[in-house]
Image 1 (cartoon, one colour):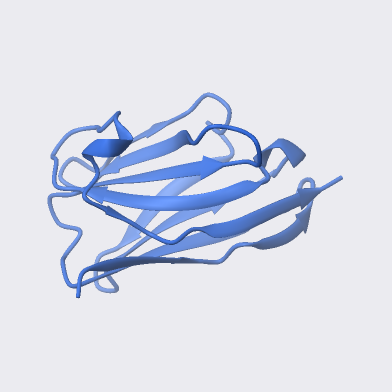
Image 2 (cartoon, one colour):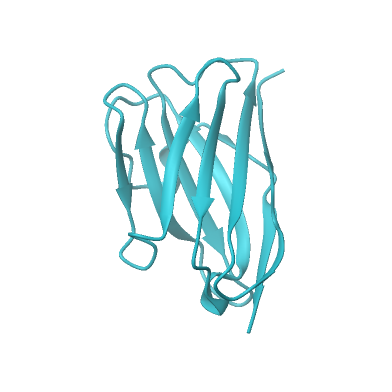
Length: 124
């Protein structure tokens, strides 16, 4: 069965850090683009980052650039979203997605697989 599973969400105070994990089963992340999205209550889903495994390049939204970092553990077939200096506006459900592209993906509906999401809550 092909699936993505996120974990690592939780509640932290502003300025804190969290690491989200996205584990793939049923397929390898090789030659995939891995996107991180988030959706806050009452808001539209927004793209946070896109990591292209083939090139190792990562795109970040301006709102998180310099605070969020994506990394990959190939042996564990896992991609991580390292979040530091968290702000209250980072509060959202975070989703990872995978698409079989060797370039940055910009449209959510191009991703083939989505995880179930993990809640991140940042308090002041």
